[in-house]
Amino acid sequence: MTDPVNSAASDIPAGSWIDRLAPEGTRPYLRLARLDRPIGTWLLLFPCWWSVALATPGWPDPWLLALFAIGAVLMRGAGCTLNDIADRDFDGRVARTAARPIPSGQVTVTQAVAFMGGLLLLALLVLLQFNRFAVAVGAASLLVVAVYPFMKRITYWPQIVLGLAFNWGALLGWAAVRGDVGVPAMVLYAAGILWTLGYDTIYAHQDKEDDVRIGVKSTALRLGAATRPWLFGFYAGAMTLIATAGILADLAWPFFAILLPAAGHLVWQAATVDVDDPRDCLDKFKSNRHFGWIVLAAMIAGHMAG
Image: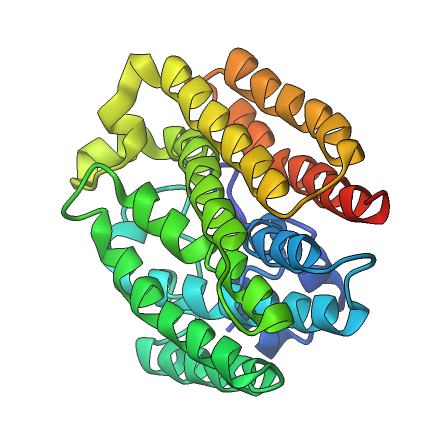
């Protein structure tokens, strides 16, 4: 089947590397795994890298960082596939998502399940490279990953469950380095959940009109016009907890100095986002990749100067 023509409303990027380089038969599966939209992989990966950096005196182990990068690509792909399977009827009724592989008929549900199974098998091979405790921690995340796609049907706060899933790496990274789950990792995990509440509320504002029409819930609908002060609250909590995790891990002063522009970035997001402009919401959401890099640099610098 040939690729559908991307409409202006579709969230599938036109002319991406998939269109230019990938064999035609692989394109729907690459899009199903969102390999043309890497921001979600970055948001899943940064808590892993932060935790590895927080747990490691000096430079983090490049091998561990590489394993987490591969795992993030695979698990994000598997999670997106599960989400698209669960939401296939909803996605077909929304212009932004109607051209996705399952609702558009490019991939059947059976094919999607098989593809997801393959991704999970590869992710398991990556996970088995860690110590036994880390393997158990990683396996425990599957329950949260499995229930997330259904939360928007029952609660206006599905972003909390997304935060639980997307920041599991804050526990796993520490476990991969030290073989346990220390208090700094738990604090970092809580920080990541608040960070996710902020950025995914911004993201959800893109779909609020369609969500009302098709009957699904989000924090964007729950908070509405009060979103901005809530964003400041989510982000203030996240920054406080990240700083606390650094204190508990005995990071030196460069950590706190570099953390200041990270805090400024979140203030900029909350202060300037136009929740009624889908393009601005998407741009602010994507900008969290910069935040992730700044926090990672802060943690490494804090250890190097210690």
